[in-house]
Length: 527
Image 1: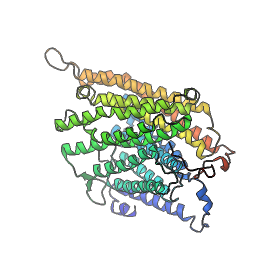
Image 2: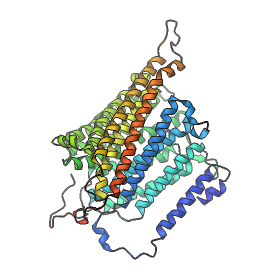
Image 3: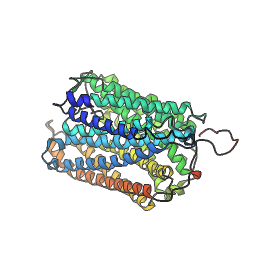
Image 4: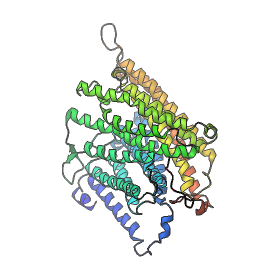
């Protein structure tokens, strides 16, 4: 940080260097204050280490409120472009990646780190291998997110979808991510449970494949160590292919595999039912792992990419429907015998609706990958609607449901502060997601049809401005839908904070323990 701050003092990278330096100094003091503390006793091994999970949940809720607020600002900018307030830093092109990074990586990433560390310990019956590396991962990852969202308004970007951060932030994330994977391997190596539960396979695939995607897509040569700007190693259509190999698999392994790991643990536990078919969950895992890797080229239909590569992406996208629906169906069939709980428990309802949205969105994605459909949908708001059906309906819903389930468990409370607020959050989220997605579906199809309507003399019937005017009411509806989702997120953050502040925690004796409670009983497979 000091090096970047000094050599980059005439470049925006200097600001980030100072930020990294300040974060480093702060962390030194956070760790150093315990240097003379007595060595902790071995009694700590009798319980799980959930402090990083607690911090990750709090950080996730901070990021989701911030990210949704910026996202709704972006939506209102499309209604009224004057909402940039005249500054280049607040233009659509600069704050839109602030929104995507905050919600995908800030909210989603912290939610994944927090829940994965919780699930890893319970399904392995083993405490985390140490108490420092989880904090390094959590704080280091959030430093990366802060570097990203502060860099975009300054114009620091390499202009790659979901990978806008520049070279120095990318290198830092690799270091953090390797430590994250090592935590997983070290914990599994010392597990007391012989079986590795399927949720851990999804979490490990998410960590491993995201590392591979991130490294390859961000191979670049910086102008100098004192400049934020870098140039990618790839050019032309090869760069586009690498980017969408990354971009679609970021959806596959960050926004799908990781959250399926979440679903396969929290939904059965909350429902009090075993997974409908454990074998189906394994088959689905390997199907998603092998097939998703080939689907990215469907983003490049009708481009300079070779036709056979486009067809390959389309074919694998259609095949993906099988393992995707296997997971969605497995989740819903797990709820057989527990539908009364779904009716009464808003937390479980979050998870159920997430599984429904996952099934619908994966069907829509496979459908939109077909070249004839893509000819209508490409570059339109239909794609925006599809993405947000997955982001709001699947990712956010399963995360909120999992967080509502885990908060009373890790803070040892009997329940959430207010079941009514969970209920209100659920219905606001459903209403916001449906308003948003239906507005974009209508907008996108109308857009696509207007762009391809020809008059009798072979000229375009509508100008681009005509289509833009037709979109205006749908953009208003989208912004309102986003606002409803934001209000729900704020209610959720308040409810979680008040739950944390509740007195009279449940005694440690009733908390879950690394060792099986039954004396003399052999450990049973986690499924």
